[in-house]
Length: 629
Image (cartoon, rainbow, N blue to C red; front, side):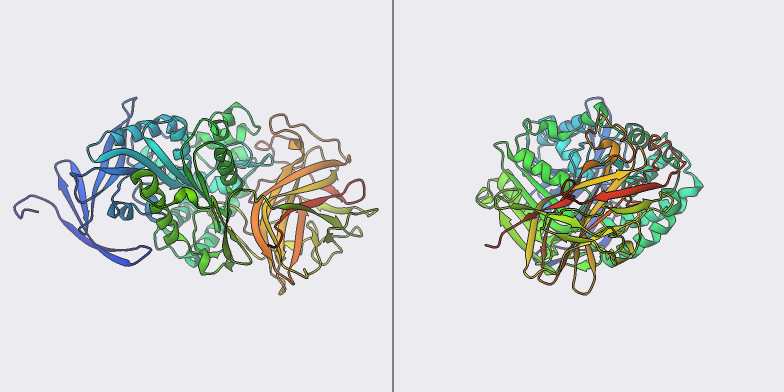
């Protein structure tokens, strides 16, 4: 750099941890004409707020990371995010790392978010904006014309939606912890609104939108917004500490409680002008055209590019990650799946209240995996990607990784474990039993569901935006009279379950509509009750998500409750437990038992619930058992 050049110089020191070494990088930032340029050591050039014009003349902005020699051509990696391009990338495959290994990296704010122009309209523009961004990058002098995409959560959806438009230069994508936008398993589960996850997500999103539109946010949620903003910055930090996140989330949960209790839901203190999509979710509570518009599952046969899918057993989108892998695996393009014990966006060994050991600490390994993946598909390296087993999954309990060729595992045996009791399975001190023996004549179990006093959520597969996700001790929940508890005898031998889970429940209620919940639990010898997966079904959605219909009070119905999937080794001396109830709040919104549309009701009714387990009505959980080799 010439000494007489009129550059404004800002020097700072930052430390980046890569898989092989701690690298100290001196960062120099200056202006060159209208461009804001940063130099990281001797390896990387960063061009801030590069303008990319979409087909409708709206300008989106991105930060461009290039190897120092700008005269060469490189494959380009793109991440499109609504979460602020200057923050979101830090945790998974940092662009500095990719640039130091011979890639151009484009991290772009999606339309209407942060530095980009236009109006944010949930997913509406991400198909064509994704196409235009990919093709713009491919034409640049610094690009070889080969493009890959990566990122997690919404950043995974932007990849899939871009792939729908089939840009000619898009070679491969790596969607992590993301969903397919299919109705069930996205905003709704079993016909029930995922309350805390999507209130938290919306409140996080509206802060930037309100700022850009000079809209004053309601005072009643300012403390919640402040907590979410702080949690957002901590969570996206490359050096985020799981203990700090846990504590900050607990603080936030207390402030969010009054928001979560709001009834009717349509009166939630969220400005409709800047979050119309949230109220669309509430209003369009049945499956239909709105949900089908962007449903990725309809494009499984159309999109034929290799993908690396990454998910976690305690992620909100476990089910969709697995479905995407399976759906795209039917095409000719190679698909790869990595499933760890993680919650949403946390690729570390400490999840919830458990430590899964060093093998689960995977951020550096995921960075290396991304690099290997892109080297193969975009540079033609000799790494034998396609010769490796397609599925890599973490077995909790054993705390080890396994590899296999297909999902679900071809050797899986689906075994029914039946509910039993003498009519008093309430609480963990009741007489509920879980076994492989089929029931004969048994008295049904009864409990009262009062939506004014719902069963509290304890961890689970939720977004970490108002509650701590992951494994938590369920003992407090299991002390309640409105929770039925069925527990096996301590196991004489280890038992591995890996695969999809479901509960078949025979039940009745004296209401026209109610909910039933199920939770699979690993009971440790010391009494720690580790939640593995949970699910819910709204009785009116028992047959169809498109055409719900009320039930006849006091009639017995069969319900199938989807518990997504897991991989867990129940060790010798552990017990298998199933909890049955009618609420899991605030993970899911409460059914008020009145039949009034879920977002409009405020009056509540107590429901009397009965669960049956006899020869004719054999309620059970189906476990995907993996035989010992």
